[in-house]
Length: 290
Image (spheres, rainbow, N blue to C red):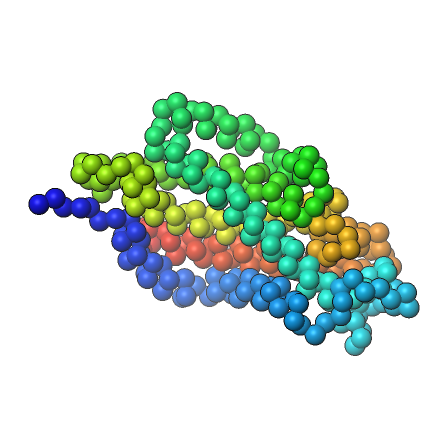
């Protein structure tokens, strides 16, 4: 009777419960998760929240400090900063998540192919990856965004392509370690196709470090989107984003410092939240700790 080796998904299933228990016991990671969820909730609920129109101007309320009428003050043309902060969360979080989704969707398959098949395929993919990694992440993102044109969509594509080499290299390294395991050799011995081996045995076992890296990269992507918007290559006026709000606020630091304070704090908090969550996931999913 042929014995089918246990799939990576089945092994991963047993590890998930242990990892989840460990994650719940990590108060710092839970705090990071709460911070991330807070910003996600306000971004999702922005259209239904009873707040002012983020693009409505008031020439009688230009650069007003925080007050009962405008909780976070107003900007250079009288727009309510509180409502622009909430709507800006949509652009910043969307850019972070979509950019990483692009990077993972493109990078992981290349990493799987490179690590599993090796040979000339591996050499070609790795030399292209080396070329991309030779350029600093943010410089590459700026160059791609400038080439594609200023818009939030193009900024997300540029950030995603710039982050893709990280996931290619990470996935390849994990595959090289996993493909020599006994359960993979057993799957080959019973004649399973390469596609089934990769899907059932390789991918589930390399997924945890990819998830951790994706969580940490979201924070990097949010900073990159803010940088591109600050340079005028991301979200375009009058649509709000935290980066574009900082770009405007730099001209009024002495007259209206609150214009830069709130978006700066928001970027800091959401990035800290994703980093704390990513560190917690790394500890929880570390096989040496489970």
